Image (tube, rainbow, N blue to C red; front, side):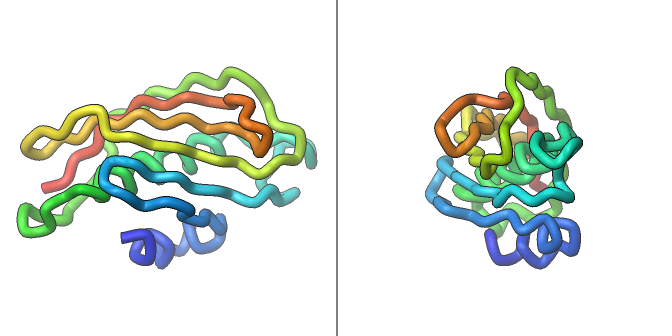
Amino acid sequence: MPGIFGQTPFLAWLGLEVLRYEHDDVTTRLAFRHELSNDGVTYHGGVVGAVIDTTGGLVAFSNHDFERGVRASTVSLALQYVATSAGSDLHCHATTIKRGRELIFTEITASDSAGKVLAHGIQTYRIA
């Protein structure tokens, strides 16, 4: 699944790297680039949100029975931005909270390279 996500034009341009892809446990990294920032130093909030959303989608697929379907989308995503970065790579860690018949509930934390939490996300993802 990480390879399929990486073929998406936006994600390929973004350069998101999957570091860990285990059942209900996914970690990604986005290398800092000037064009992903507001001011050359801090990430644009939309970039952080996109990485949180994508990492949540990956964890939703990480323990999915593909015979049940592969059509997927984010149903809901709530974000809390708690700090800014200072030119650091962005690391996201996602876990699955609950799996239903079609809905998967995930929790994602975005941090900088030093481990400082930058944002937190709660996602509902649907795979049918």
